[in-house]
Length: 333
Image (cartoon, rainbow, N blue to C red; front, side, top):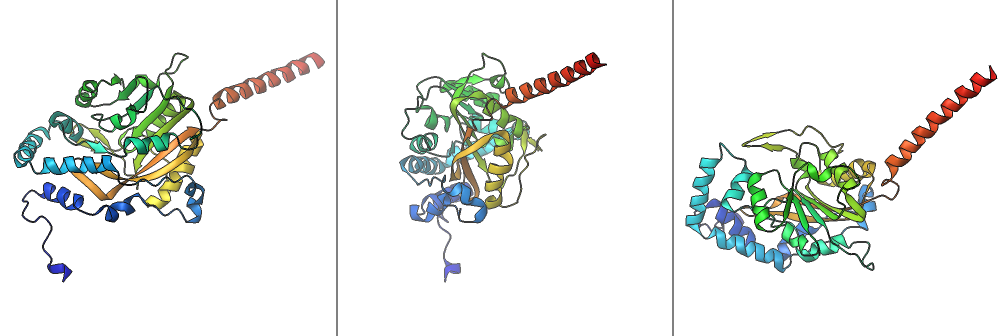
Protein backbone atom coordinates (compact mmCIF):
# COMPACT_ATOMS: atom_id res chain seq x y z
CA UNK A 1 0.00 0.00 0.00
CA UNK A 2 1.02 3.58 -0.70
CA UNK A 3 0.90 4.44 2.98
CA UNK A 4 3.62 1.88 3.77
CA UNK A 5 6.06 3.18 1.14
CA UNK A 6 9.28 4.57 2.66
CA UNK A 7 9.87 8.28 2.47
CA UNK A 8 12.12 9.21 -0.49
CA UNK A 9 15.73 9.90 0.50
CA UNK A 10 15.03 8.79 4.08
CA UNK A 11 18.75 8.11 4.47
CA UNK A 12 19.43 11.89 4.19
CA UNK A 13 19.34 13.20 7.75
CA UNK A 14 19.10 16.90 6.87
CA UNK A 15 15.43 17.78 6.36
CA UNK A 16 16.14 20.68 3.99
CA UNK A 17 18.43 18.59 1.82
CA UNK A 18 15.85 15.79 1.77
CA UNK A 19 13.12 18.18 0.57
CA UNK A 20 15.25 19.56 -2.25
CA UNK A 21 16.32 16.10 -3.40
CA UNK A 22 12.77 14.76 -3.31
CA UNK A 23 11.29 17.63 -5.29
CA UNK A 24 14.16 17.81 -7.76
CA UNK A 25 13.90 14.08 -8.48
CA UNK A 26 10.33 14.44 -9.76
CA UNK A 27 9.79 14.11 -13.48
CA UNK A 28 9.29 17.39 -15.36
CA UNK A 29 5.83 16.24 -16.51
CA UNK A 30 4.74 16.20 -12.87
CA UNK A 31 5.88 19.76 -12.36
CA UNK A 32 4.30 21.14 -15.53
CA UNK A 33 1.01 22.00 -13.87
CA UNK A 34 2.76 24.65 -11.79
CA UNK A 35 2.88 26.72 -14.99
CA UNK A 36 -0.81 26.13 -15.80
CA UNK A 37 -3.67 28.31 -14.70
CA UNK A 38 -7.38 28.05 -15.38
CA UNK A 39 -8.50 31.22 -17.17
CA UNK A 40 -11.81 29.83 -18.42
CA UNK A 41 -13.99 31.47 -15.77
CA UNK A 42 -16.03 34.48 -16.89
CA UNK A 43 -14.04 36.91 -14.76
CA UNK A 44 -10.71 35.81 -16.26
CA UNK A 45 -11.65 35.55 -19.94
CA UNK A 46 -10.26 39.02 -20.58
CA UNK A 47 -6.82 37.80 -19.50
CA UNK A 48 -6.94 34.44 -21.28
CA UNK A 49 -5.67 35.81 -24.58
CA UNK A 50 -2.67 37.36 -22.84
CA UNK A 51 -1.59 34.27 -20.91
CA UNK A 52 1.94 32.98 -21.64
CA UNK A 53 2.61 29.44 -20.52
CA UNK A 54 6.17 28.89 -19.39
CA UNK A 55 7.90 25.52 -19.44
CA UNK A 56 10.72 23.93 -17.52
CA UNK A 57 13.87 24.70 -19.48
CA UNK A 58 17.61 24.15 -19.20
CA UNK A 59 18.14 27.21 -16.99
CA UNK A 60 15.67 25.95 -14.41
CA UNK A 61 17.18 22.47 -14.48
CA UNK A 62 20.63 23.96 -13.96
CA UNK A 63 19.37 25.94 -10.96
CA UNK A 64 17.87 22.80 -9.40
CA UNK A 65 21.07 20.85 -10.06
CA UNK A 66 23.07 23.51 -8.22
CA UNK A 67 20.62 23.31 -5.31
CA UNK A 68 21.11 19.54 -5.23
CA UNK A 69 24.89 19.89 -5.23
CA UNK A 70 24.80 22.32 -2.32
CA UNK A 71 22.39 20.15 -0.37
CA UNK A 72 24.88 17.27 -0.46
CA UNK A 73 27.53 19.38 1.28
CA UNK A 74 26.71 18.49 4.88
CA UNK A 75 29.55 20.53 6.38
CA UNK A 76 28.44 23.67 4.54
CA UNK A 77 24.83 23.18 5.61
CA UNK A 78 25.90 22.73 9.21
CA UNK A 79 28.09 25.86 9.09
CA UNK A 80 25.26 27.93 7.58
CA UNK A 81 22.88 26.66 10.26
CA UNK A 82 25.24 27.75 13.02
CA UNK A 83 25.78 31.18 11.43
CA UNK A 84 22.06 31.71 10.98
CA UNK A 85 21.40 30.88 14.64
CA UNK A 86 24.02 33.44 15.71
CA UNK A 87 22.89 36.21 13.32
CA UNK A 88 19.12 35.74 13.53
CA UNK A 89 18.58 37.96 16.64
CA UNK A 90 20.42 40.86 14.98
CA UNK A 91 19.78 40.65 11.22
CA UNK A 92 16.96 40.01 8.77
CA UNK A 93 16.73 36.81 6.74
CA UNK A 94 17.68 38.80 3.63
CA UNK A 95 20.86 40.14 5.25
CA UNK A 96 21.83 36.69 6.55
CA UNK A 97 21.40 35.17 3.10
CA UNK A 98 23.55 37.93 1.63
CA UNK A 99 26.32 37.39 4.17
CA UNK A 100 26.34 33.62 3.65
CA UNK A 101 25.94 33.86 -0.13
CA UNK A 102 22.83 31.69 -0.20
CA UNK A 103 19.09 32.04 -0.80
CA UNK A 104 19.37 32.76 -4.53
CA UNK A 105 16.05 33.12 -6.29
CA UNK A 106 14.90 31.85 -9.65
CA UNK A 107 11.74 33.02 -11.42
CA UNK A 108 12.21 32.75 -15.17
CA UNK A 109 14.99 32.12 -17.65
CA UNK A 110 16.40 34.75 -20.02
CA UNK A 111 14.33 33.41 -22.91
CA UNK A 112 11.17 33.51 -20.83
CA UNK A 113 11.86 37.11 -19.79
CA UNK A 114 12.47 37.94 -23.46
CA UNK A 115 9.11 36.45 -24.41
CA UNK A 116 7.37 38.60 -21.81
CA UNK A 117 9.16 41.84 -22.64
CA UNK A 118 8.41 41.50 -26.36
CA UNK A 119 4.80 40.33 -25.87
CA UNK A 120 2.46 42.25 -28.18
CA UNK A 121 5.30 43.82 -30.16
CA UNK A 122 7.13 40.83 -31.61
CA UNK A 123 7.28 42.41 -35.07
CA UNK A 124 8.67 45.72 -33.82
CA UNK A 125 12.34 46.63 -33.56
CA UNK A 126 12.58 47.35 -29.85
CA UNK A 127 15.82 48.81 -28.55
CA UNK A 128 16.38 47.79 -24.92
CA UNK A 129 18.99 49.95 -23.24
CA UNK A 130 18.18 50.81 -19.62
CA UNK A 131 16.94 48.32 -17.03
CA UNK A 132 15.97 49.02 -13.43
CA UNK A 133 15.47 46.06 -11.11
CA UNK A 134 13.71 47.10 -7.91
CA UNK A 135 14.53 44.95 -4.89
CA UNK A 136 17.15 43.05 -6.84
CA UNK A 137 18.42 40.98 -3.91
CA UNK A 138 21.80 39.47 -4.74
CA UNK A 139 21.27 39.99 -8.48
CA UNK A 140 20.84 36.35 -9.45
CA UNK A 141 17.49 37.03 -11.15
CA UNK A 142 18.73 40.38 -12.48
CA UNK A 143 21.41 38.66 -14.54
CA UNK A 144 18.75 36.69 -16.41
CA UNK A 145 17.18 39.98 -17.56
CA UNK A 146 20.17 42.30 -17.89
CA UNK A 147 21.76 40.33 -20.73
CA UNK A 148 18.86 41.50 -22.95
CA UNK A 149 19.93 45.15 -22.55
CA UNK A 150 22.70 47.06 -24.26
CA UNK A 151 23.11 49.81 -21.67
CA UNK A 152 23.53 50.12 -17.93
CA UNK A 153 21.64 47.97 -15.47
CA UNK A 154 20.43 49.82 -12.39
CA UNK A 155 19.18 48.22 -9.22
CA UNK A 156 17.72 49.14 -5.85
CA UNK A 157 17.93 47.18 -2.63
CA UNK A 158 17.23 48.20 0.95
CA UNK A 159 19.69 45.71 2.44
CA UNK A 160 23.24 47.06 2.59
CA UNK A 161 24.58 43.51 2.35
CA UNK A 162 22.66 42.90 -0.86
CA UNK A 163 23.83 46.28 -2.21
CA UNK A 164 27.37 45.00 -1.76
CA UNK A 165 26.47 41.82 -3.65
CA UNK A 166 24.93 43.83 -6.50
CA UNK A 167 27.99 46.05 -6.77
CA UNK A 168 30.14 42.94 -7.04
CA UNK A 169 28.15 41.95 -10.12
CA UNK A 170 28.78 45.35 -11.73
CA UNK A 171 25.29 46.82 -11.35
CA UNK A 172 24.71 50.47 -10.44
CA UNK A 173 22.91 50.65 -7.09
CA UNK A 174 20.48 53.51 -6.65
CA UNK A 175 19.01 54.84 -3.45
CA UNK A 176 15.64 53.23 -2.81
CA UNK A 177 14.00 56.68 -2.97
CA UNK A 178 16.27 58.60 -5.37
CA UNK A 179 15.35 56.57 -8.47
CA UNK A 180 11.81 57.98 -8.44
CA UNK A 181 12.70 61.66 -8.13
CA UNK A 182 10.48 63.85 -10.29
CA UNK A 183 11.76 66.40 -12.79
CA UNK A 184 12.80 66.77 -16.42
CA UNK A 185 16.15 65.07 -15.81
CA UNK A 186 14.58 61.95 -14.35
CA UNK A 187 15.98 58.87 -16.07
CA UNK A 188 13.44 56.93 -18.17
CA UNK A 189 13.84 53.17 -18.27
CA UNK A 190 12.95 50.77 -21.05
CA UNK A 191 11.97 48.11 -18.54
CA UNK A 192 11.46 48.18 -14.77
CA UNK A 193 11.35 44.79 -13.06
CA UNK A 194 9.78 44.43 -9.64
CA UNK A 195 9.93 40.80 -8.57
CA UNK A 196 8.65 39.64 -5.19
CA UNK A 197 8.72 43.20 -3.84
CA UNK A 198 5.13 44.46 -3.90
CA UNK A 199 4.17 42.33 -0.90
CA UNK A 200 7.34 43.25 1.00
CA UNK A 201 7.30 47.06 0.84
CA UNK A 202 5.60 49.70 3.00
CA UNK A 203 3.98 51.67 0.16
CA UNK A 204 3.00 49.31 -2.69
CA UNK A 205 0.59 51.72 -4.43
CA UNK A 206 3.16 54.50 -4.35
CA UNK A 207 5.75 52.10 -5.76
CA UNK A 208 3.45 51.23 -8.67
CA UNK A 209 2.85 54.92 -9.39
CA UNK A 210 6.57 55.69 -9.32
CA UNK A 211 7.29 52.83 -11.73
CA UNK A 212 4.57 54.05 -14.08
CA UNK A 213 6.08 57.53 -14.13
CA UNK A 214 9.66 56.27 -14.60
CA UNK A 215 9.34 54.15 -17.75
CA UNK A 216 9.81 55.51 -21.25
CA UNK A 217 7.14 55.99 -23.91
CA UNK A 218 7.25 52.33 -24.98
CA UNK A 219 8.48 51.08 -21.60
CA UNK A 220 7.24 48.02 -19.78
CA UNK A 221 6.97 46.89 -16.17
CA UNK A 222 7.58 43.26 -15.23
CA UNK A 223 5.89 42.57 -11.93
CA UNK A 224 5.99 39.24 -10.13
CA UNK A 225 3.90 38.78 -7.02
CA UNK A 226 2.90 35.81 -4.88
CA UNK A 227 -0.84 35.24 -4.76
CA UNK A 228 -2.83 34.99 -2.55
CA UNK A 229 -1.39 38.29 -1.40
CA UNK A 230 0.19 38.18 2.06
CA UNK A 231 2.18 41.39 2.67
CA UNK A 232 4.69 42.13 5.41
CA UNK A 233 7.77 44.32 5.80
CA UNK A 234 11.12 43.18 7.20
CA UNK A 235 12.45 45.41 9.99
CA UNK A 236 15.66 43.67 10.95
CA UNK A 237 14.70 40.37 12.59
CA UNK A 238 11.08 41.54 13.03
CA UNK A 239 8.16 41.77 10.60
CA UNK A 240 5.45 44.44 10.44
CA UNK A 241 2.42 45.30 8.34
CA UNK A 242 2.82 47.73 5.40
CA UNK A 243 1.68 51.32 5.87
CA UNK A 244 -0.23 51.27 2.60
CA UNK A 245 -2.64 48.58 1.40
CA UNK A 246 -3.84 47.40 -2.00
CA UNK A 247 -7.55 47.44 -2.94
CA UNK A 248 -7.57 43.71 -3.69
CA UNK A 249 -10.80 41.74 -3.74
CA UNK A 250 -11.12 38.04 -3.05
CA UNK A 251 -9.11 35.61 -0.98
CA UNK A 252 -8.04 33.00 -3.54
CA UNK A 253 -5.35 33.28 -6.19
CA UNK A 254 -7.96 33.06 -8.96
CA UNK A 255 -9.96 35.96 -7.54
CA UNK A 256 -6.91 38.10 -6.86
CA UNK A 257 -5.36 37.57 -10.31
CA UNK A 258 -8.31 39.40 -11.85
CA UNK A 259 -8.62 41.93 -9.02
CA UNK A 260 -4.95 42.85 -9.34
CA UNK A 261 -5.52 43.71 -13.00
CA UNK A 262 -8.80 45.62 -12.62
CA UNK A 263 -8.77 47.07 -9.10
CA UNK A 264 -5.07 47.83 -8.70
CA UNK A 265 -3.38 48.27 -12.08
CA UNK A 266 -6.16 49.80 -14.18
CA UNK A 267 -6.98 52.75 -11.85
CA UNK A 268 -3.27 53.62 -12.00
CA UNK A 269 -3.37 53.65 -15.80
CA UNK A 270 -1.54 50.34 -16.17
CA UNK A 271 -2.75 47.72 -18.64
CA UNK A 272 -1.85 44.02 -18.47
CA UNK A 273 -0.04 43.14 -21.68
CA UNK A 274 0.84 39.57 -20.67
CA UNK A 275 0.47 37.30 -17.67
CA UNK A 276 2.04 33.98 -16.73
CA UNK A 277 2.53 31.68 -13.78
CA UNK A 278 5.83 30.46 -12.38
CA UNK A 279 6.81 28.42 -9.31
CA UNK A 280 8.56 30.10 -6.40
CA UNK A 281 12.13 28.82 -6.42
CA UNK A 282 14.46 29.95 -3.69
CA UNK A 283 17.72 28.22 -2.86
CA UNK A 284 17.13 26.47 0.43
CA UNK A 285 13.33 26.65 0.17
CA UNK A 286 12.12 25.22 -3.13
CA UNK A 287 8.41 25.74 -2.47
CA UNK A 288 6.71 24.38 -5.58
CA UNK A 289 3.24 24.00 -4.15
CA UNK A 290 2.73 26.70 -1.55
CA UNK A 291 3.89 29.93 -3.18
CA UNK A 292 3.20 30.71 -6.83
CA UNK A 293 4.35 33.77 -8.72
CA UNK A 294 2.05 35.51 -11.14
CA UNK A 295 4.17 37.55 -13.52
CA UNK A 296 2.46 40.56 -15.10
CA UNK A 297 3.81 42.58 -18.02
CA UNK A 298 2.36 46.08 -17.72
CA UNK A 299 2.29 49.03 -20.07
CA UNK A 300 0.98 52.55 -19.50
CA UNK A 301 -2.36 53.38 -21.09
CA UNK A 302 -1.87 56.13 -23.73
CA UNK A 303 -4.37 58.48 -22.09
CA UNK A 304 -2.81 58.12 -18.66
CA UNK A 305 0.72 59.27 -19.40
CA UNK A 306 -0.34 62.91 -19.68
CA UNK A 307 -3.48 62.66 -17.57
CA UNK A 308 -2.11 64.93 -14.86
CA UNK A 309 -1.46 67.64 -17.48
CA UNK A 310 -5.03 67.28 -18.75
CA UNK A 311 -6.48 67.54 -15.24
CA UNK A 312 -4.41 70.65 -14.49
CA UNK A 313 -5.51 72.23 -17.76
CA UNK A 314 -9.17 71.52 -16.98
CA UNK A 315 -8.83 73.05 -13.52
CA UNK A 316 -7.19 76.18 -14.93
CA UNK A 317 -9.89 76.43 -17.61
CA UNK A 318 -12.71 76.18 -15.05
CA UNK A 319 -11.08 78.78 -12.81
CA UNK A 320 -10.65 81.18 -15.72
CA UNK A 321 -14.27 80.63 -16.75
CA UNK A 322 -15.48 81.44 -13.23
CA UNK A 323 -13.35 84.59 -13.11
CA UNK A 324 -14.63 85.68 -16.50
CA UNK A 325 -18.26 85.18 -15.42
CA UNK A 326 -17.67 87.19 -12.24
CA UNK A 327 -15.95 89.95 -14.22
CA UNK A 328 -18.87 90.05 -16.69
CA UNK A 329 -21.41 90.38 -13.86
CA UNK A 330 -19.38 93.23 -12.39
CA UNK A 331 -19.41 95.09 -15.71
CA UNK A 332 -23.15 94.59 -16.19
CA UNK A 333 -23.90 95.87 -12.71
